[in-house]
Amino acid sequence: AQTVTQSQPEMSVQEAETVTLSCTYDTSENNYYLFWYKQPPSRQMILVIRQEAYKQQNATENRFSVNFQKAAKSFSLKISDSQLGDTAMYFCAFTQGGSEKLVFGKGMKLTVNP
Amino acid sequence: GAGVSQTPSNKVTEKGKYVELRCDPISGHTALYWYRQSLGQGPEFLIYFQGTGAADDSGLPNDRFFAVRPEGSVSTLKIQRTERGDSAVYLCASSLTVPSGEQFFGPGTRLTVL
Image 1 (cartoon, each protein chain N blue to C red):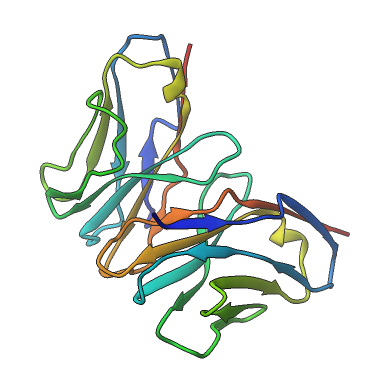
Image 2 (image 1 turned 180 degrees about the vertical axis):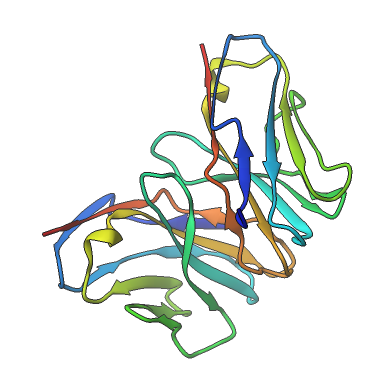
């Protein structure tokens, strides 16, 4: 069974600092996709960044970047220059090639302090 | 609005009652997904539609849960004989492309079973 583990339930960071959120996953497949989603108090899940497993290059989206270590099955999210609006729950998720269902971790609450 | 919409935003019902939750996907999105998010957890997959047909319903917990998408657009999640354990936020998402296109989420329906 595919699983996603987020071992840090909660983190806080000062505005403008850099923070890294960790995620590990388990799969026996070779073709899969990894995602980080953000869920603010409004409940609406927003895609932050996406990584295809077959791509060696780490994905980046402005202040957000990932460190994808395929052999270690690790997929961490780095947020640079943290902003107050980054305060939210962050979920790591996974979908396997041939299946459209997202498998989510339990999430991590990030608080950015002024 | 151009996003995924869900109605109602909140639903309170009594144990044993029947409820229907509605999802309006983004126009033109052929894929539609339902997830359930319990307190303090990540979303869990329920069912995925491609067009009018359920392509994967492996996440439905039992036969009290049923979902339809008769015209390939709006979907309704139906729960019979509700139980207190059904209390959760029910999230709907849609995507334009498969495989593993970005899933755009709605704000969810918070279901409370008393």
